[in-house]
Amino acid sequence: MSIATDDTKVTVVPATIPPSEEGQSSDSETVIITWDGDNDPKNPINWPPWKKSAVTGIGLFATFIALMNGTIITPAHYAIDRQFDINEASFPNSYWMITSWGVGGALSSLVVLPVMEDFGIRYVFLAVYLIYICFLIPTGVAQNFATLIITRFFSGGCVAILANTVAGIISNIYVGNRARTVPLSMYITIYLASSSMGPVIGASVYQFLSWRWIGYLQLIWTGIFFPIFVFALPETRGSAILKARAQKLRKEGRKAYTQEELETTSIVQVVWNSVQRPLYMLCTESVVFVSTIWSAFSIGTICLFTQSAAWTSYPSIPWIAPAIGLAMVGAGCTCVIVSNANYLIDAYSMYAASAVGAIGLGENMFVAFLPLAAQSMYTNLGSHWASSLLGLVSLVLAFAPVAVFVWGKEIRARSPYIREAAEEERRNVVGSAVGMNV
Figure 1 (cartoon, helix red, strand yellow):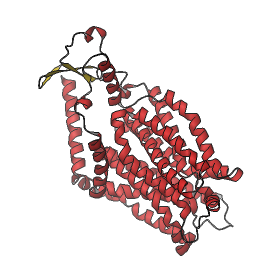
Figure 2 (cartoon, one colour):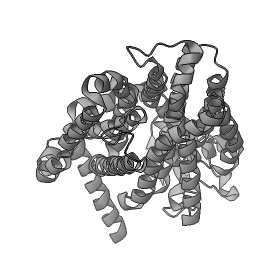
Figure 3 (cartoon, helix red, strand yellow):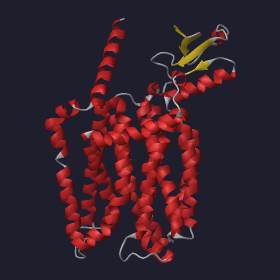
Figure 4 (tube, helix red, strand yellow):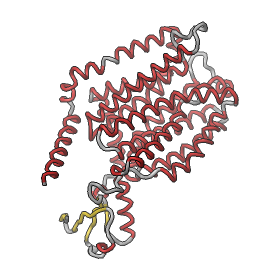
């Protein structure tokens, strides 16, 4: 198929060009690289199930070992206070390590993730993972509290990017909402399980070793697994695979490009769109706003509970009671976050990345700042009623799905993003039906 654009002839050809055809193009011909049909085996969406499962498993494992970094240091805050002479009398200053981590994650996701559009998921993941390893070193060797805060900011940014690239892997290799449901649910479960396991592992390390070994051990196991990701994690972004093939052909003297390269947008514009659209949707889309508050409060509560307890905090009550309660909290948070993510992906379709990005921003900000209020809240209200207040807020937020169930159709009808996404999906369905008839 040939298309005339200005004075240049453009030919759309499969990604794999037979050698016999390479000499047929003139120097003035621009070749657009596409997949070799809908069933091209090199297209990530056509990978066999075993390969998809293996790549997903590698990504989930990376999520687990990375996200643990957010909370693993919390059990050692008393030792860090003594080491650096930090005063906790009037304000939980030790929690600034978690705050800086959350803020770093919120900002980096908005600014850095668009780079994946140009460089692909694999290279961004490996580069950020290597930078993350470097920022683990100061956790063990820091000589002052400011060093910990600054390096935690950057390590939090790296972890957020790693977690989002894994979510991108799932969206790249699974097509359709039903196909993505199970891996997406597993991803969110691993996300929460890792954050919850962090304090447990950190406390175990601190009990038998010094607090600095929390950083040392993270550095050791993170470094050990890096070669596995280098050799076992393939590129999953289709546009990046096609771009690499186009670059290879250009080195051979062909004028080969992908459609994205011909319609290129400056990286500054890409970053600006990535930053402003989630913020705009957060402020103007009621569905996104409520989902963000609900999910962010759930995540923030989990982090807040690393330093508090409720009605089961009496010495006479066995440890299993708060453990069961926290397990129920974790199960509820998982249901909230999974359902919110699935609903937004289904409703916003082509704008789902921006909607989920808004939730990610809110979650990181709640992780950063909600636990800062813990000390004053638990001091003024008491450990029992402070946690009860959180339960009452959760109860109010629990009416959100009821409102969506009753008035969801009217709410979605008022959203320009949802209307446009629905119209695009209808066009795709009609186009597919026409193609089948032809």
